[in-house]
Image (tube, rainbow, N blue to C red; front, side, top):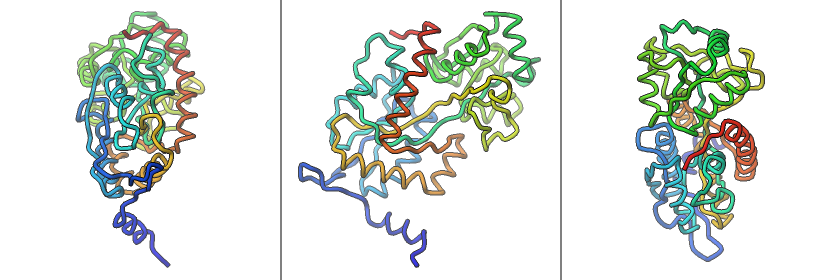
Length: 323
């Protein structure tokens, strides 16, 4: 009987490829993976973790190309105009595929028309956090403060329309409360002001807050996913804390230009799926605060459609717009 290890080694020794409808072979050159955020962030970390394994499986280098700007619009526009042969991909996220269409009056790309889902890959859990010395020590405390002082508590987010901002607006909406939003350029300054006591609370991603939590500078009140996180088993969910049905998180998936041949998309999905099944890859992602969240192209497309409708309601109700 062939062992699982032998099968894995055999797969890595024989790179995957496919003959395309036009008679060529894919991949025939390095693959460019666009990352819509600067190097060093969570999305970049996911891309580089996956890229190393994908390179070995495909027999071609996966080159990470960071193109930050305009809530992922810069990278998405580059992808939409790329040759649809599978050699240019993007690690897109909630903004790229689901929320930008509601945040912007006009986009230089259309997520449905110009982009093709290849594989959903990961999600980044969000955590409700306060300064460790804050008198707010539970979700109940936070709710009481928000209701007693409507519109007076400040909360921060990494940017207007970010998943963190939208998750907070959804929380406030379900709670029936209001607070003052302070948008920042990225998560690092939010973290700094939260630790410094200049913000009452924030909903931030787990990779951003883990260090401050372990250093006893921040306290986690709840996680925003429906289930507790393996990384924070002692922290309750918002659902458990009285915000019934609450479920919000940032997510990422690989997309290609529209009209990419389906045999190429199928090969890419199979390769990504095999990468996500590798214990070392999964462990590295989990250690970085990222959860595996794989799905095939069709399921990914359905998920995007549901997320688009869901967040459009929040965006429109809060009157959030980007220019």
